[in-house]
Length: 154
Length: 95
Image: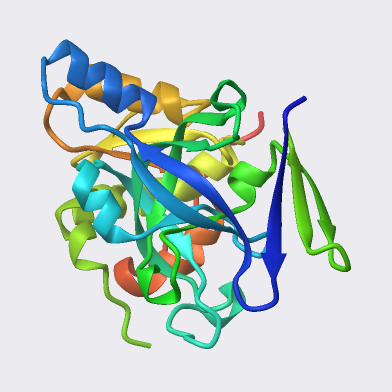
């Protein structure tokens, strides 16, 4: 089981390096249609067990041309615009994507061939993505506050 | 509450309306967590995974955008301000 250990801080949280790329189905379609295939884009992702789904900054999504897949649900604390019982969730655009969490030994990257990512502006917070519970569901996470480390095993 | 769709979802307004209308029936048929492929006012199949739904959609519609929406009961409440009250599914009569 690959293990990835990263440092965390009070201000920046725990961040991992990630590759954002085309989702598997989109990749197959583009290959068959002989369409150009953009290379993966490196991103800084915050590990966030409070996020239901993984979010990616719209700039990265546009760079890759990720296709719209559905309407997702995004709850933005302190910004109550949708039904209160849903925590203010509003319809949000979701895109088909693929992800890799980068391990120092690249063969041990955590590869997610296809998932839906929500387009949320994040670069203003110094990150490109939020790694939500949809991806973290495949991981064992150990948050060691005193040591200042977070360990992901998958 | 002033409900609006994000601009990028506007081209899928008809598909989302179709999803919303069909959602009570899909939930009644225990499809929660599955994915439906929607184009226009028609549902083109129910799939267990996003991958299957996307692959089917690309085969069926090629380069034309379509929606592959997860069946999620929370959308009933969230989409109501946009599309009105969802229809209640008609239960089959028990003989």
